[in-house]
Length: 232
Image (tube, rainbow, N blue to C red; front, side, top):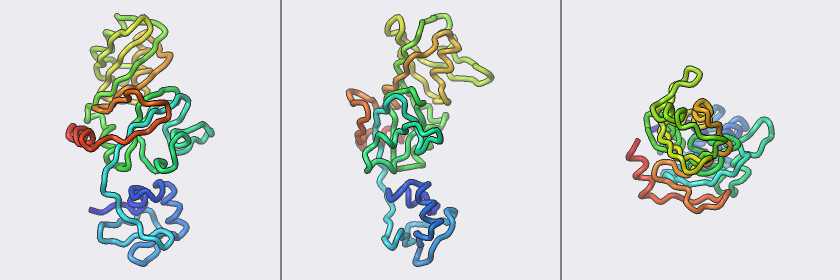
């Protein structure tokens, strides 16, 4: 199996893919003794990859982490507007992890992180049907409007799958989705007459936020990872 050189370096934990591409452009990366000058170069398990003269070893162990995303942070490696990102909140040893999907700037709670870019992609495909659960604080509850969301709804020409929605109080809802379109919960609840004031994710498949603290990260055990992968 072959892998793009920049992805290989990123998966090894040496640097992010973007930084790896800069390393390649600067002539700091070699494969089998020859300098590589393009991130489009492919390598396999038999190739000897070196960065700054040091051998880079492939990382074959898939790791998955639960991260408690704080409010007012961007799910991205770098924000053009200079806003704080999730990587500003992570300890140095976790800064090369990839995020699984996104939570918007104001949304808090569970964000999965992994060293496996392919797994991150597969977990967020609509075809995966992996349930994500949220607690939404809304300005008001309109049960008639929520019934539309429970049966599937089209907003601005985009079709959203049926959601499981339960009222926890006069202003709080438990919402479960299986698709994960951009800003899906906020868009659908607003269209149903229940605009979101606060949004907090508490689970992604078998992974639950539990009693984690804001900004905390913890590794997921292999049994849970295997259970998650089996659903794909």
